[in-house]
Length: 89
Image 1: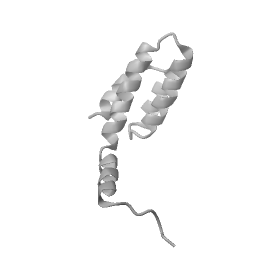
Image 2: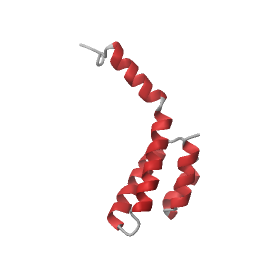
Image 3: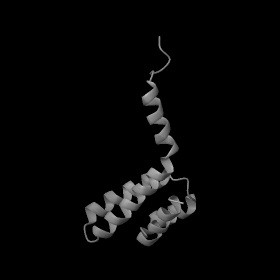
C-alpha cells in the first residue's frame, strides 16, 4: 500500500511555494476582509460572515493571540487593519 499521495515535481514546487508564501497570503486576505468590512457597514449578515473569515485568517497569522482576541471581541475594524498591516511585514 502507498504511504501517501505522490506528486509530480511541478506539483511539489507549487505546494512548496504556497507554504513559503503563507504569511503573504494571510496578510492579503486580511486586507481584503478589512476593505469588505468597511464597505459592508450596516449589513449585519455580511459583517458577521466577514468577522468569521477574519477570525480564521488571524488564527493562521501567527500574531499575538491576546491582541487578536481583543480585536475580535470588540469587532474593532481599525485594530483589524493594524493587525493586517503587521501581518504583511
